[in-house]
Image (cartoon, rainbow, N blue to C red; front, side, top):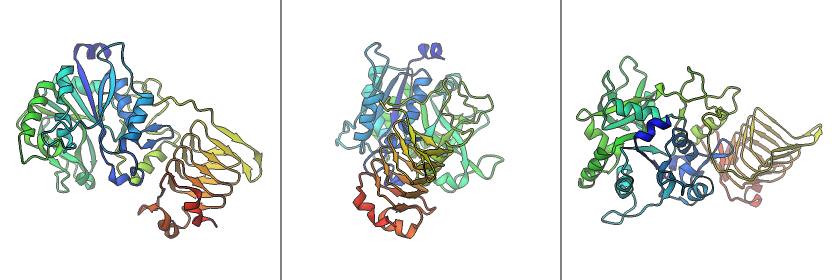
Length: 422
């Protein structure tokens, strides 16, 4: 894999500037790629791990909205370089290089405003990937497919239920993988041949031949009617007229996984989707295997102590059942059941945390009960409080989804949620 990439210069670009409005309030103070996931990770860790595990070490991360948390995470755990010119992970804040000195107007404009980085790197191909999905992907396989097809553009695609067509770019392909049409977020987009219940969705991951990419970006920038977006403008114009192919993500295989293991990809664009993806990790054999040493999910290495469970008395027993518990957690006579606990969480005596996603440094007071809830970082739940048991009352204080998931925003003090004490 590495030898193959040494012959083909690959530049990776991660688009990590999305607002993530559907994940509010988790994105109130951070960009979506910076949202914590799975106890110790951030969403962006998955795409960066895919690049590194695939032997691609030249990566720019384009940021924009609410980027401080993301920039801090990248600086603490992901930036390296100095040994080789071709090895770097560099965050690139919006440069406002357009004629009007504007923020990025779309995904294509984001690349266009940083085209100098591509020209300086002089790669054979540019892999442009989104930074806001949870997935594992051997990117080398997609690049090999791109080269074998002599493609100008390759788009990673995956079948999704037709009801989700409004959320994705939907593509039509010929038998040999040629992309014939591209429908951006169209609820009436055609379904897959022979499968009236699913559409073939673009994953927002693209491989471009460099010369083609630069030409397309310049042409798009000169078009006053363009939204300057790959999915809305560039790809639909190319469909059926150029060497643009679909890469079937279902054929992607990860080293260290069984040959019949289904590729993992989740769009965690909503609170419910984010919650369910975290809950998936608790399974005995989860679809997303975080314990595969041949394809590790990398992140910042924090100097956390081990998790700790204290007391073994009736009604005062520190334990976690069917849960993920991160470093630095102390369950001091409290119980976590069917939950995911981030770093440094405290669960005090008699407290019960059930079916929850608890982010870093939260403190669950004595005898408190929290159910089907996402606690953002640094939340303090007072003694005897309840969250997730009376949704009407919870709606007064917190965000509650239609399915009944309660989200308690970060940086709250015990005083602010003391109205929940029973």
